[in-house]
Image (tube, rainbow, N blue to C red; front, side, top):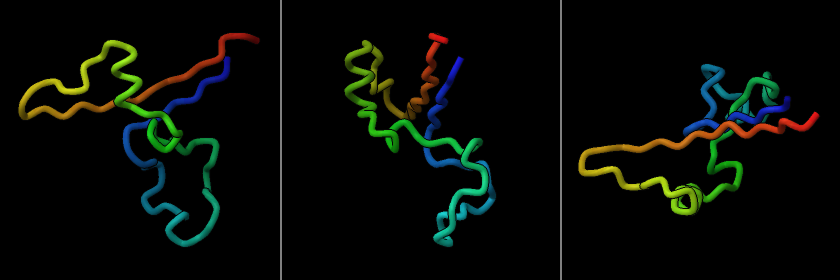
Length: 72
């Protein structure tokens, strides 16, 4: 099974990202992209899935995804 985990926020695998030095990723097989960086509109996804975006005063909501292909 193939999986694509999508993170909340930036990848934090390395203490300093090589992107900051115009170098390629040291660990592309372990790096995690965010949902938004993958081109997914989080608000539209939540609305279409019936998930509330606003969860009340003084709250913060985070969205991550794990996409998988079960066809082998």
